[in-house]
Amino acid sequence: MSIVRPYGDTTGDGMVQVSFTLPLPHDKRAEGAAIQLAAKMGLDPAMLVHAKAMGEAFTFFVVYGRVSHLVDTSTVQVAERDYPLLSAKDVNAIVKRKLRRRLSVVGACIGTDAHTVGIDAILNVKGVAGEKGLEYYRELAVTNMGAQVSVPDLVQTAVDQKADAVLVSQVVTQRDAHLHNTRAMAAAFREALPAHRRPLLVVGGPRFDELMSAELGVDRIFGRGTTPREVASYLVHALLGGDRS
Image 1 (cartoon, helix red, strand yellow):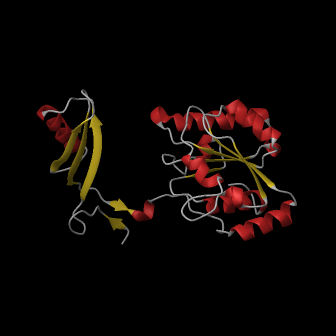
Image 2: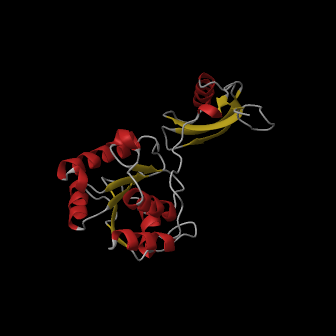
Image 3: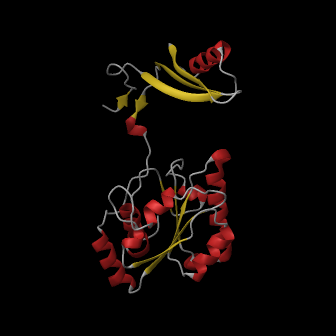
């Protein structure tokens, strides 16, 4: 079946749960406002299941209710993995055979983003989800610049390290900071280097739309749950096994 609807208590009942914060102190009026908002969002009936004051002037709500909307899965667009998933041994072998030098990777969190969990999970030896990070790959030379790196510093380090690929993690998304920072980074690399010398630009973070790579001026976007093996396999595919995406 390509047509589906949400599941809550019984199959196809359309029940969903949403959470949000309103700039109102927690009282009966605030709870009524939450129910009204949920109704305008299409929940009918809308039931308030949780409300908690967040300071003196804000309240966090969880609302449960039924929606009538259907989803046609045949029209869903996603960024499918279009390259084979390789082992560390295979990645090293391909780099050694085709590049005949270590593949240089520079990683950072740019702007005011101080959250290094994402970039460290991909780069550090300890890795994530039972997979070793890119520092574990003997044929990859990894430079991890850490957090709050300015775009000019990132570009200069990429030039100094003769980077084949630049990996940027963005967790802070307030006011679309991740989008603004990514566009600024892509523009800076275009200005600093000719196209044939520009490193592969890869960004990742939980709020990115993986279909926006062309719009943001980068080669690839990775979303939540990405593993080091996926990134390493992509780098080999994009740099050594075919054209850039």
